[in-house]
Length: 483
Image (cartoon, rainbow, N blue to C red; front, side):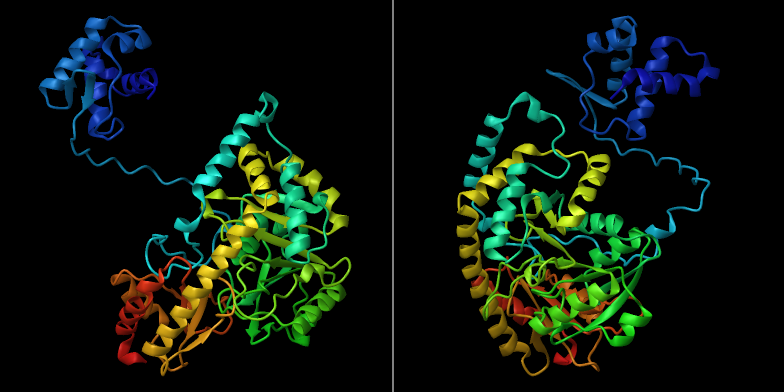
């Protein structure tokens, strides 16, 4: 709290009263407590320190504090003076800013509900945080901080720490079939930052961007935020399914897809469809944004390599994140760009993205290099497969005659599809939340203007096996007439 600024502003507003200094300070502090500027529990400066800061006599401060104490606004204790718990008076409504509001690119976005607690059952996209080796991660962070030089406290390489870029490139070549060198890897603050980068760096305002329908709302927000024209492309049992007319009448500049585990339906894009998308993108002069957000958790069948490595020089921007494999608060993702784009993107990042968090990046590089990341993935894969199996069995037992499970072969979530004539999924979501169960409505993931799916999105990564059946039974009870 800058008491000098507070007193000067209050004095200007009340100059007409010509109060003496001690009355002015008393009125100023009382007004600040009344309007909540000095919140309950705030410890005021010691009288001597405040007198020195304001350039006034200490007795003036003592008078103000004593008056406030008599009125019940502050409470003296052995350590000083604390603001009492008084309900602040309503603040005057500030005048509207004389402008239209946010830019058009920030409007017309999908409505976002309040963020649900990760502790609530079936919250999608959340890993089992209690299974993360936190003690080991703390040791890696401590080691990274101890090894930092003073120079490393400055801004880092805008593309990311070289050690982490190398570790990610090595990991992707071995585990996902991605063809890349460290210079093609750019570190970001997560998937949303990666999508923003792709949209602003690789397309101009007014260009067309395709996203899957239903699809990921973050991609819709990123592309619209960059001024792109977003077109939804239907998803079938083999993945994103553009028609010949789509390629000709709605020629894209960017194509966003989640081929390893489509979000939210969960289908895995077939090899033939992947090649068709690559060929179509080449012919259209487009780039594919491949979001490989949870490909590490494959539960059935052989893993399919990333689209980026299927053909030489694939027109693919490959995006990944550690939010699903490790923990969301890490906020580290990456984009692998075609080799020809890397130098230009490096220049762009140098002018627009001041890098930091050196210790976290170095710790993550060591986590990857040491093999502990691969070990952690194996443990989580077994755990999630067990939870997936238990959830599918429970859904079959309680809702098998009324809904179909889709997209359970990979990832951390599955979709529960309702017949078209069933009650709206949004109403089921509302009823479930009243019971402390978080499920997403598939209809909320529809791209405006496209068909709407009816069903639920259920995350199972953080739900213990022993609770699964009881939670599904509770969910079934909130579905009207079992559909």
